[in-house]
Image (cartoon, rainbow, N blue to C red; front, side, top):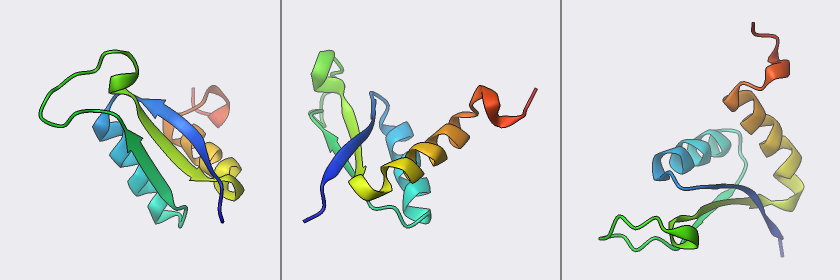
Length: 78
């Protein structure tokens, strides 16, 4: 069985979905875990956490894609 590891924790559902869509497009399976209670916009502490998980074998590729997405300082852009 594949082991799922945490790639990122966010509090923004839209950010989580964008990351999932990009990783899906790169054939990296993604699971989003959230403790949010849907009808209530509660984001206090861990209740607001949204965890993005990927297979352990894909973590390095996913981290590289995430770094490119966020525009890391070493991307050559001034």
